[in-house]
Amino acid sequence: MEIWINPACSKCRGALGLLDSEGVGYTVRRYLEDVPSEDEIRAVLGRLGLEPWDITRTQEAAAGELGLKDGARDEGSRERWIRALAEHPELIQRPIITADDGTALVARTEEAVREAIARGSTSG
Image (cartoon, rainbow, N blue to C red; front, side, top):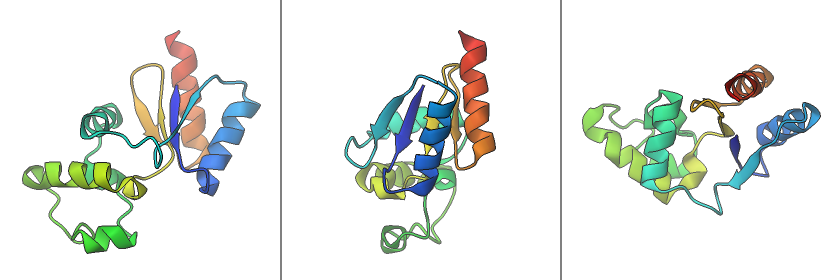
C-alpha cells in the first residue's frame, strides 16, 4: 500500500504510527514534494470513488484564490478541480492510503486506517 502524506500533518503522523504498530508494509509519498500528476489524481479519485471536490481542502487560502471554495461542483468543472489539485497539492486532503485491493481511502481516522489495513490483508 502507499500513503500520501504531509509530514507536518498530525493525522498523517497518526496514520503512519498505526501502520507501524500493526507491522504493515507501506510506501510513503510526500505528495507536496512528489506532486501527483493529473492522471494520478484521476486514478486515485477512481479508487476512492470520489470527485475532486470531495478531497479538496477548501478552507485553504489557495482554494479561495482559485475560486474553488464556492465553485461549481459538476462534471463540467471536474477537470478544473483536478488541474488545481495537481498545481496546488497542498489542497489535497490527507492522508490518502491506496490499499492493495485496488481501492483507496482518505484515512483521517483510526477506523479508516484500520479499514485500509484490512483491505490489504485480505487481498494477498
